[in-house]
Image (cartoon, rainbow, N blue to C red; front, top):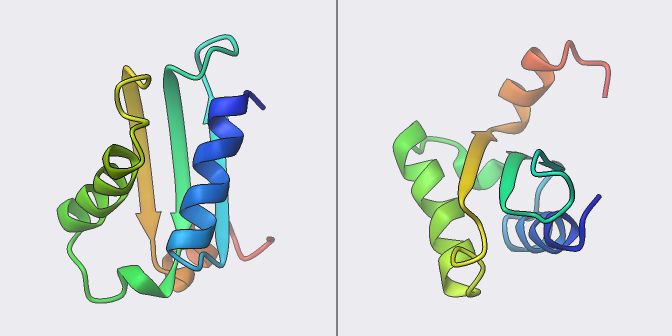
Length: 89
């Protein structure tokens, strides 16, 4: 995991009090293309677009968006994450 991916993972996990959080670096280690998966009760009752904006807003507020060129966000409730992961995690 790149330094950027670990920084984003720790930030999202802490900020959203995530039940599950993982970040994959798809940019050969430089951290400019990330996939973020975060499951948190903070997303309950929140539409998908607003969830993405919350994650992007956090990254922007921390000054990280200038270094990220592409980001895929999967922001789910814990129940959605369990269903999508097959309940195996």
